[in-house]
Image (cartoon, rainbow, N blue to C red; front, side, top):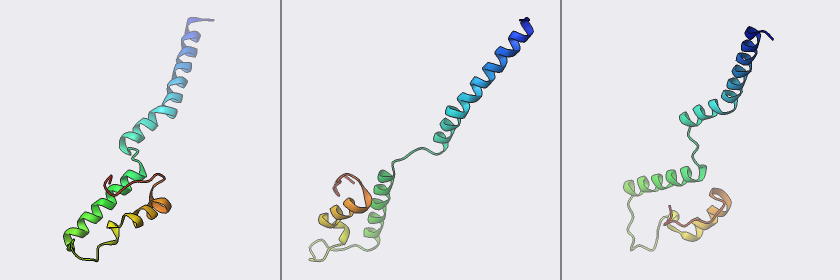
Length: 95
């Protein structure tokens, strides 16, 4: 083989290897940089806590009253966690 042909073949192979790496890893790295993966359950829990805090600021309630907001019921919270929110049990204090 001539030296020019060998260099051309090696350049072609190196280019294809770089293209394959970018296709598999490079774009994924760029994607995770701009769109970080956050667990849905953690994001949902933080949103729920934010909404509850905002609601309590706007509509305060007296804790000595017999009536209390439904989101302070541990039983109801456990039932919702089983069916809607999370795969494992989580308590209100952990949020």
